[in-house]
Image 1 (cartoon, helix red, strand yellow):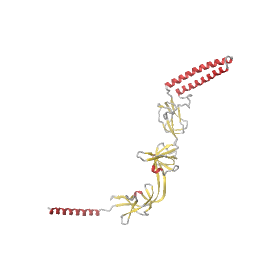
Image 2 (cartoon, rainbow, N blue to C red):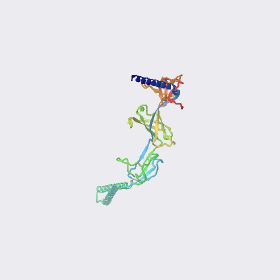
Image 3 (cartoon, rainbow, N blue to C red):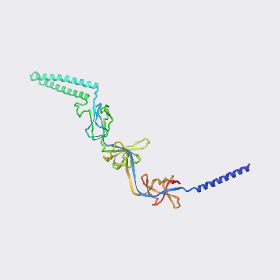
Image 4 (cartoon, rainbow, N blue to C red):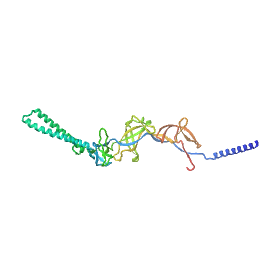
Amino acid sequence: MNKKLKIVFVVLMALLFFWVLLYFYKANARAPEMFKTDQPFYTSISTKIVATGSLNPEKEIELKPQISGIVDAIFVEEGDLVAKGDLIAKIRIVPNEQSLNSANSRFNSARLSFDNANTIYKRNKVLYNKGVISKQDFENSELSFEQARESLIQAQNDYQIIKKGSISGGNSANTSIVAQITGTVLEIPVRVGDQVIQSNNFNEGTTIATVANMSNMIFEGTVDESEVGKLKEGEPMKIVIGALDEKAFPGQLIFIAPKGISDAAGAVQFTIKADVEVDVKANIRAGYSANAEIDIESKDSVFSIKESLVQFDRITEMPFVEIKQADATFKRQNVELGLSDGINVEIKDGLNDGDEIKIWNQVTSGN
């Protein structure tokens, strides 16, 4: 039995030996891995902060009615240019029946009081001229007459306002909605026949139209807390609008929020605002998405490589690259990095002109 086990063991060892020989043979016969290389170059590098946001008018006015009613007519359309004082819409008053009846009752009472005071005044005037009553009695009746007339006028005005929305019913009536600034009509959220509510201390009222001056625009966006400390008010910036084929406009940073706001991911964002110099022929629209690019540091003609060529040691986290040697092997070379724009990175030390740096993509036989 032991003899058979020895034979089986010898056979297994022989098979294992031949398998090891075959493995090393195939490994040595395999073609060496080939890698492409790249060389250092000189270029301009700048670091920038990019803030995402939107472009909005600096001055935007919501037009609201001073009295409740029904939209009777709208004289403009969204996108129209209007001047200050132009008629935007007309409101038709639908008076409250109870308020109208009360105002009418007060008007009738005031008229009766006025008629009575007028009769007494005329009678006392005749008696005073004949010397029947004293001057004081006559003056008292005259005062009552004047007070009754003022009360009648006030009651009549109140009734007219409740019924028609104004005293005169002219162009300056509360029923006329006019533009308060010169600009573009951005939005008309109501239509003819819609009911609207007046603006007062207890209700902001229904917006009839929104008018904005599109020649004065501001950028509103956010930056991360790690970058906000690098910003200063008054710095120039470039506003890039994607909807206009990445067209850029100059701007100036005018506001940095003193308090950050956490987003859904937990990152703290700070609001910034910038004045934007807009070309009137650029057909800018309110609400365009935009990116603000703020240059922090820049260098011209610096010794650089592609940042994708740089590797980092897993233990020391020091940067390094691999340089091709004369025998086609690669040697690790530590480097000192400088300014980076995310694509190219400055090399302060560790490389020379003409060095061939390993690209970490293996060249296949098909390349």
